[in-house]
Image (cartoon, rainbow, N blue to C red; front, side, top):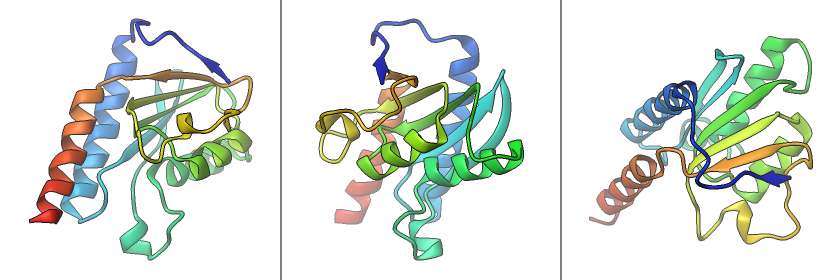
Length: 155
């Protein structure tokens, strides 16, 4: 896995697609799910959008990026995500990073870091060595949504 510099300027397209992922996270929030959203795109074209659905589906593996990646691979007619970027509002957990290894996207762009359960806590990296990972896009918005969700749950 190649980490891109955190100060790398993101494109307008990256911002547009992460905003879509944030919309999915907001929908998850409204549905009582941990507010994480994901979008998979190739050449700016959205192949799949998803949100966490672990409560709805009663499935601990129904994380946003896995649901989106599986849907996008199906749309492409295969099991891999060549030329694709996975946008996700929260740093993937080890389970998701491991699954994304097998999907082999070209890039992963995530928003907020996950200091308790994120893949970056583990070494060696679980991402595919040819996948470029960018972090921090719209991190404040994504983190704010998560903080508000858990604040309300504690009340």
